[in-house]
Length: 183
Ligand code: NI
Image 1 (cartoon, helix red, strand yellow):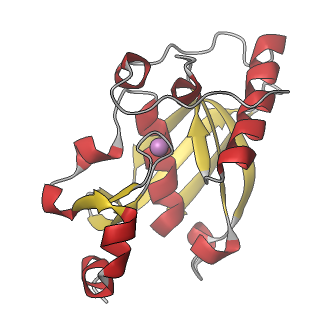
Image 2 (cartoon, rainbow, N blue to C red):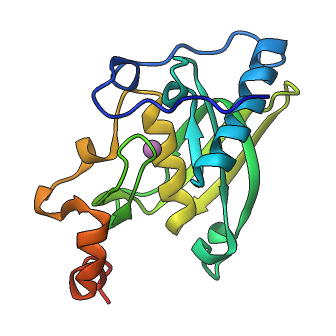
């Protein structure tokens, strides 16, 4: 168990496609996931992808806390979920724009379009397959984390870079924060 160093935007490991994991039950994958859990707890984020800790493999961990959950079943809180080789299938062409932040882009936030509804499937570290349907923030978080496996950071998904800024400055402007959300 160890807290790993988090790669920041500009490091090449964040900008390449991560390799699939051949054996999700391998001990080195269990060790990687345990270290990612420690690292996420320490850093205080919602999700972490292996490339963010300098490991170019298709592994993601995330959870959806109560305060980011919605009322609908597909937006409900999710326990810490350990995904090997996750795959996303959009269930709609519709996208919504909302704020995101990333441990690899520290101190910043940006407004990012994401599919409103997705199905995602993965292999567990026990070697089982699992899948869920997600909407709202749940869908957004999974798309953000899985993008890391394809070398994509959230600013690369943004359509309006005037909505990228230092979180401290952006949050001072609550009218802007709310207007992106249509509030
Ligand atoms: Ni991120």
